[in-house]
Image (tube, rainbow, N blue to C red; front, top):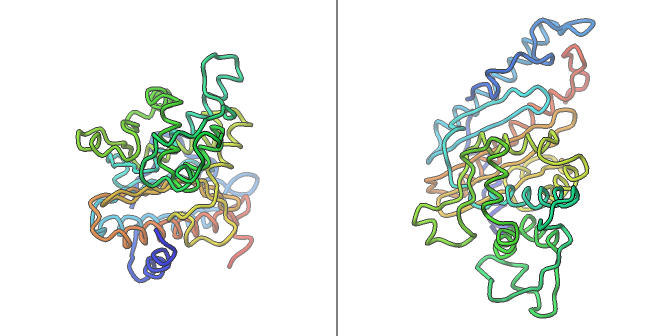
Length: 335
């Protein structure tokens, strides 16, 4: 998307939208200390503080629900509080094409194999493995790889991953998929309990897509994937930090588009004809959260992008406010 396009749909965000609805992301979980209505002094939150917190949360839920309901196309949303685990889900179990958001899973597999290699496993891809640029594998929308010099340029897997994340270079993505193994990407996803997230084709392989071999996921699974990574359950501490840093590379995308400058966002957007998606971790101060918004059957791609921007901003405003409360739920800094 060009800069002009981003400005166009950015201006449409506030004029085009209304609202939000979910269900608890962790319905089966016990109430957390942060959300218990019995907390007050000495670790127990006052009833009035809980009431205010729930009012803001319900307001966000309602806005999400209304937006999803009125969306011209199909939209799914998952928003997860990384502090207490509760979440907002709407159409969150519906399977959507991921477009380039599936590259989060490819990046994870690269870091996973690096970790296995450090632990002594043989035959695993490493971050510093060198790749000789081969023009025969070039595909469309490869803004970096197509500019490299065949026979002379050598890049590492880490470099290739950077091209994939920063500018969504499709040749870089395909090179990594081949070096890592598509089946290994999917095996890692299954081991994390993600059964609906599937890498089934290379980038730009539309014949495979026509055969039904589309790359797919659900908003809930994309949120769970990012939550699992954030909590250090997929990689060790060092590689988790490196992964999040690389995924946080500044890029043109919906989630951070309208957030205040300087807010860290580790995300990967995706787009295909009629499809807009973005999934990421937003590091709101004191209250980080995960958000995944996926759409399809979209007639106006700019309006779809605008809605994703707006949902991300509304969620950020809630979590930013929650990050400014003390242990009793009292606001200690208000706008």
